[in-house]
Image (cartoon, rainbow, N blue to C red; front, side):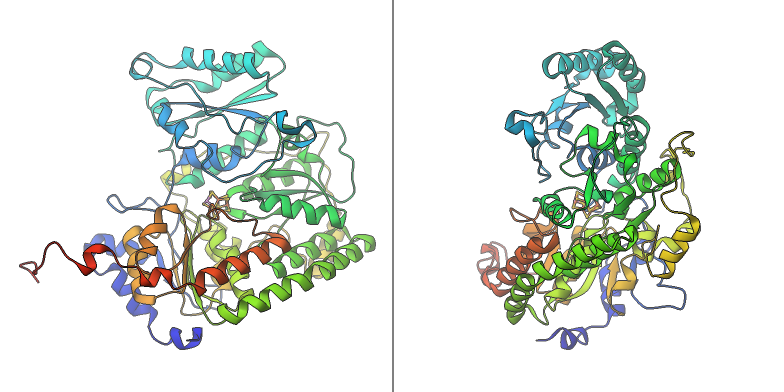
Length: 547
Ligand code: CFM
């Protein structure tokens, strides 16, 4: 059955009503504001409520602030010792669980790579009662003595904030004591914000304050950029770097996939910031512009066409015919294989439907790949995005700052006295804008989705199952918490956080991997044959008295 035929089967208003029908009235009212039926309005798309607290009792897909800071932003940097100040569980559950890969570089496998370790102060009851600062200082000293790293990052977990350990002073004292190791801390207690999004902001602030700009030794290379918001999940960053290299583009620093301390420290030398995941890192892009004069553009390397478009955008910015020609040559060389793979998959995927509920950018980016397969995204949403990720940055001035957001520090950044250098004159920027290069802009997920599709913020376990039952997508994409409950409904499920065991899915080679994987999943009927034992052979029978 084609997508169009399926779409007429249900009315989005009915689906929305059905999703919130069982909630108590107050909860239903709140959730209704986070479920948006997409339509194109004169000034954009309808308003959605986002980045607000999950209603207690609801089983959310979200993670905590500590996860966003320690795991997401700082996790992929291999030569920083990431020391967690807290009970051991917080370290254990953040230990090698996100599939961010790293390449230890020319030093080989024995080079500085601390990602495989779980560093923790292992707080006990007595530390909670009497304070954990001494224990933290001892742990920092121990890590320094054992590894002599360039840098040690300290992360606060919930109890640290509750008892008031001053992790920043301890870190500062240790940094002064060592002299050759940069030590700093993150107040990223899990409860600090409404989701992991707050953790991104906290991480961005401290990376900017303590690392960016620390190394002025010139980085060699042509067309210097930073790639912001790419975390090398399943090797995505490797594929993007392969393409950059082929084009002759120098990627100074990826924030933070396959990165090192020194890459962050030299990032201020780039001439352009290419922002992939807007949600997690837009703060750094803005700060790099204000302090050093580096403009930023939004890119997306998920999808072969999106990759080509992003490369062209970068080339257009540098206004150098040599780069423009090289980029065209690379696209021409890579595309035939991609197109052949897409065609092969389309025989089985064309007209099928997808749903995706992921973090704060992938529910948007991956629609590119599904489009290339001829598949329609009938419902999508983010776990922790803000309104601008749905509706575009034009709504930024209208977003109400609530108490939860005010709780997260906004750092004041000013132009650097000696190093601020606007990369282009105002005139040159104007000409580029006229040519269609958009700076400092992101249009969001909603304008890219069809009218009548359902865009849902902070989807929960109950609604996910309801949505699948009602709309019967051919594939559902989310994370490990959703994986098995969806498969039990007979629908194939693809993890778009960890990629299950697959990837890379970025760039040209990644697109081919994705086409093949989705073809395999939607062509298999195995989940629809599966029945839970109690469905065939119930241990209890009868009806409830109220039925
Ligand atoms: Fe950005 Fe990410 Fe995402 Fe994200 Fe994440 Fe992730 Fe994600 Mo999981 S940084 S917002 S906090 S693209 S870990 S690599 S997959 S939820 S959509």
